Image: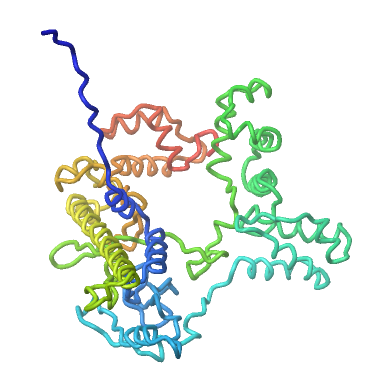
Length: 484
């Protein structure tokens, strides 16, 4: 009998669609989850979502337009059906509307249920944001710089800024539209470009960066090389062709790299994004980063709460959570039963994924908070080394699960500071804080070089190479000694 090697069948790991969906929901940020919940609610009639009206920035229950805890006109979570009117011929909608009017909010401070004041709840004036948009601020500032005759030109310029702050049409088009001279439009545009945020009203990226650089040159030392790079080599700079640029300009590659770093760390390619109204809203109405995890200090230590868990209450809709009592045996009845079963099963799976997300995120957050207790009490220099692999081992989870649970998530600390959860795993934060303190203590006539900073860190018992100092300094957005 002849023996020959026989290839073994390939063992392929088959990942179910359910597992992929569950992992995806765990990875979502707060904004992405909100969108996903809304979309699922639209597509699946079996899913009912009740939202408690809470502040999405501090988790407190909101009765009016303003959060009494954090003081902001926050993006209070709204009832999913609060704008739905019961129709005369829609008994289901009418019943749902009546149920929703009986909705009561949970009082997290007193661990009880509160009845809403409906007059305040549905006060239309209470829902109007009080802050000014970027367009309104720019027009107000322009009023003091231009004549009243040019007000229409200003409105056209500001009205044609895109979400990044760039002018989307040419000055010639506005001049022809308003039947005015091109010189008048160019003058108003030049005044617009002097306003903050710097770079507003630019027609392209090059002009945006040059406007900012020119304003900075009036306050600091002139950055001639940076201006030259923006004017002539912006495209090649984006491709990191530092050596070729240095050869053409007959300067050192290090000088080109430093100028490029100055451009990246100092100038803003999207000026409109830096506008922050008092209401925490931007010009486009986009919300700023908000916490997923609330860390509160109590008599028993630190407690962890999830904004989502306080906000959402999911359930299977009436008529879907139980099997219909009787359905005819004809084709219509079979199709109806299949329809009900499919949507009910889909809703159950979606709710299970959300609850699994909450359990995982809360377990991870509680372990991290307990491990980093000194950091919460004493500051960043007491941050202990911790990896996601260690958390996974302690919780008997997969490391990828921990990574997805902490990605794009933010924690609100007891002192009111909002940080990415990933910061709890960044062991370099304490070192960076010491490095920042050393740089802040330097004299104006003598700026510490990276070599000097490395030696000073070593004398403090933190051995560090010069290239590590350079890396940390650049990550913190601090310029080199020659540029400071």
